[in-house]
Image (cartoon, rainbow, N blue to C red; front, side, top):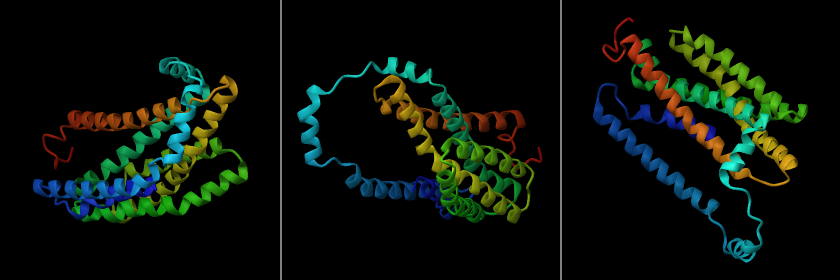
Length: 251
């Protein structure tokens, strides 16, 4: 679902945006906001606790063993090598995905010289590749019984499949390259939850207590940090290439 959401989040805006017309960006932002509110409304029934669950929690609240302070739990988590490896890999993955999706409008407008609608088949290729490959990667993980190995393979393939995108300047080749790139990202995405679950299980065995919230919170923090890394890299690229000064230069 999250994978489809990212793809649709990239496919929908070009339907309403005209490059160089600022008012159309306001329109597409409004459309995305409406879609977001609809998604939130549909999610509410699934995240709301029923009254029985609330009552059971309140009845046992006083008897629940209090865990260590957050920062102590965080320090313990950072001593776990598997967790550090997961976080580093996850941050790099999110940074790559953020950079890739943010680069497509630049490619369409400045490199391919096409209108904004050309971004739709490019992102569609990425989505198709991910949807096709995800069940295959899941089957491979079940067969090998090694989620971490599949995640590493997919991460390496993402890096390899990214290299040709640096040099391509033909529309059809870009679409095909994004489709192939999606084949690797689908597997990595499918392995995130199982690998994190393995990391949490390892911590439970070692520490004799559960602290999923610390691990999940740290994952979300570094996932959001990837947005900063993407914005920073784009800013530096604009500054050092004078792209912001003349976006249509040959530099």
